[in-house]
Length: 168
Image 1 (cartoon, rainbow, N blue to C red):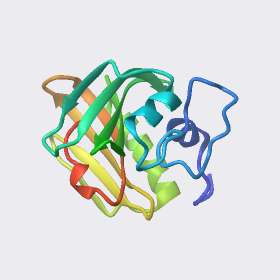
Image 2: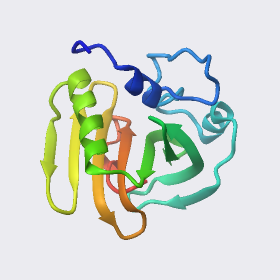
Image 3: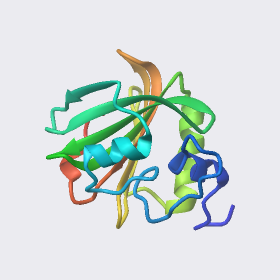
């Protein structure tokens, strides 16, 4: 695909919903959500309540909304709130390979350009983009103690960079 043109699998990943006829809204920050929404607004748009809730070390409240489809794979979906304001969304895809991570990273690089930060090591590989409307982080864990091999795709409100760390 041409630089600046989003490939179909990325469009699907960034804007995938339960309704196949939904038209991707480029004004959204993650899925059909926008930074600053309340938990109630997010639940209304996701059409479900969270399956589990907790507090991250960064101080955000995370809500695990169960599983969704992301690029044809089963992905755990989470949303994070700071003072009841939406600040972060995550896909966690377990059973992933380094090849899948590299394919998604290449697609993201073709669309967004080179990451601002990237590294590959034995126990983790990551790439991060600093975009005007979001921070986007892709991380691969080859042998995570809780989930096995997985990669995460995290979208963060650029007004809240402090919430980037951790799985969700």
